[in-house]
Image (cartoon, rainbow, N blue to C red):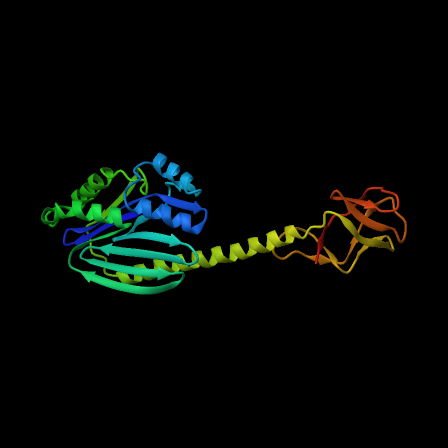
Length: 291
């Protein structure tokens, strides 16, 4: 759902990209039908997109803040991304007279091409890519004679004349006029940042899954243990934790306050801890869960 345009040549390098990110929720076959209509160029506005999505019973979240193009030193970078069961990225890295294109699946580079001299690269869905390429062809001879700043202005003009629901209304543009001698090192550092970010994100997701699993096991009803020597000794199928986190401290016996007698059974009723014999409320400073 993106467009990224890159140019590299003797006059420098230029990149432009939109900021739209679309998230779909619905039956996969319906999503595919909707995407096919989107890629055909039939939907021009957000209203048309949302209406068509409703017809297919697909929910769409539109976000226009995603950074797809960036500049670091004498290098420009642009990316289109598809996330499903696998994360698939296509990236271009540009500097004066050089372009590197990478296909990345999860944390593996599956394809790499290096281009020297001059050229124009366009990433995007079929409709947008064809539209942009046909517009650029009208200016090919002029582009070689333009400054990088003028090419950037041309890309801006082309993109702002496109009305399509797969693109944001705002675009980002960068240009450089100097060759980067250490392009491969810049790319390596950028990819390391990406892979480290994905690793950290994966760990956070695992931790979140652990927290959700623990939260689901909090006891809401039933007998949980007995009073022995003034403490609550939990039955074998239960344990207590100090807090809801990925690695909580675990207890089988915990302190308890309230009016109770030795041997009393402690129960949870409507998420409240009570003495089963009397109904008197009691308090513990831990969270009781099923194992």
